[in-house]
Image (cartoon, rainbow, N blue to C red; front, side, top):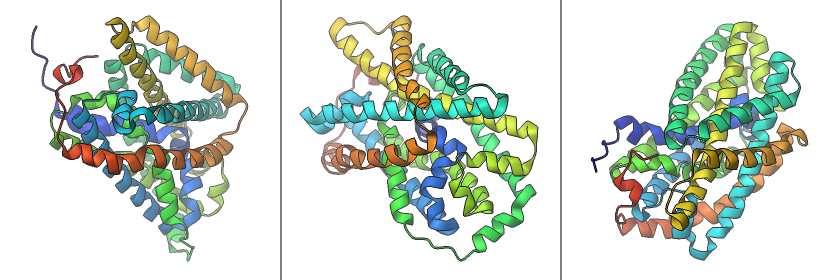
Length: 379
């Protein structure tokens, strides 16, 4: 058998962070709704402080997660939590089901809102378009999903950079005035920790791409980079939102408020395309993790991988079940109530065990190479 090619620097250092960003950015972040929910209440400067707290926590937990995955030879969330929690792994399985239902409902609602805002279509049209896109990519496994992370990232970072330039050109004076306000900064630490806590689930959702890491050094570098990759667009977006502080905190889609003030229809369309693309990669991350978890169990029992048809069927069942919730609940209510509860659950069954039990395991050194370690290019 020919030797598998060595992973590239992009696969080792950047891909994990881009995949993590894909989970974090989602519908609420891309539209600005999550930023309004967790950071605007602490004021312009308090909001920035909370974002830096979240960014540091993202990097630290990603480093620990990647190191633990290497130390235990785990490449899917079920195997990871069996090593971390023992028989208690089922608790994470239950929380992950809740997480998938919640975020896919949010993404479906956001896609529906985009379709209505841009094309005047009924909300279900945008939701169905997102479902079709997710299924298209996750059906073909790791390589297809990794390409999605890469190409959407180019679009996302470019659009956010242009967004800042146009915002500062259109209402830069208001941004400066917003930061000059004597606004309270109460709750910035709690806001940053809460926001980071429920998003840290992304560190284990993206374990399939961690197979490219070749050493503990790779794990540390990739984890350290993941935090900035996830939060730099948010920092840029939040800076622009400060122009309309505090009123923008009540907007369902803060992005629409800013885009309306820019009054550049072509860019408005481009930004909505970027949001839809962000929803696509975030949704694909969540569904792909489910497919990979089932694929590992299938391999253990049957000795073969899931077929493309099986991946398609699983994805369809998951998406139809979850995104139907988007028709019943509003985007703001889902983020404000569901995500906060999820944050506390994840602290209890992921973060605390990782920094205690996990750190002890990491210090013992890496486990023997697993099948995916020996064949990092496998899909």
